[in-house]
Length: 357
Image (cartoon, rainbow, N blue to C red; front, side):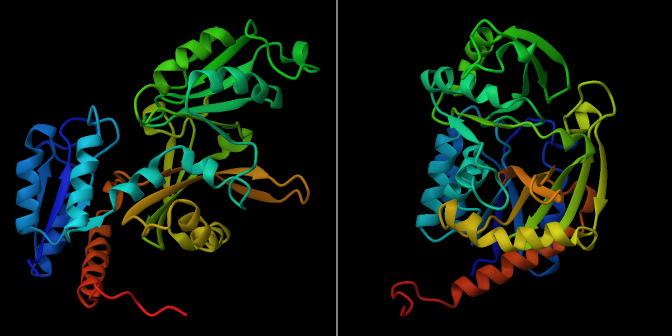
């Protein structure tokens, strides 16, 4: 082994510290040093892709990707480089295709009909489908529309039909209907006609990663969103994010005024049990990739109509660049997991497949 790990980051963004890199990347480097390994941060750019690839191939056993969606104008070149690194023996944490499968908003639709995602969830990839299907979806009540690659609540809209009683017997909402729109970024509200909102959403459908997730708005979001922080298959922390107690607020971002509370997993036994029970299904439906190194699953509370009991609904998965600045000691566990994985990988000769019954 070379006993070296590369941490990929991208310049810019609100998640960086004084010296331009993430505040929770340096603790990972320090934890590697404590175990006799070395690690470094490399800022990825398309212009330097070839040189970065050669350097990583020569120096590193593994990479850890910590590039936030949106910090690169286009991620195609970055993902191509990561695939080449993995294909040539560098351990990918995570594999780029796992990053896409878990991080894309359509991951929620792929899980619909399970214990954690209702059937009433849809994904739109083009304007014609959006214009045809979303007016039907709105007849079911208040909806949430999410763009694919946004962060900090940008492009996440609560969509409510004004004077909805006028359309209660309709099988679709007319394009002239007025909508009340609330963006999760800062809880500000706007009014548009349905036609205007659909045209506004065209920008979210552009590009190779363009898509929109459409799911029901859960009123109990005002009680808080529950973020489960995962280290591969282990629940390591729970963040309870309660939206600001102001009119129309539903966003769980700090920027919007939400209050965060950090809990040990023991405080949420039912949710932890649900997550662990759901992992095989999540892994299978999202492509059978190895679980990402650090990832999160965000849940909201709903009420089971049959039993009246609490029910947890998955709203989003994040796997591209999960932060842990509030508990930097997690770097020790992260590095232990990386080294255990590399040690296990080195023990197997993959020229010959494992025996299968």
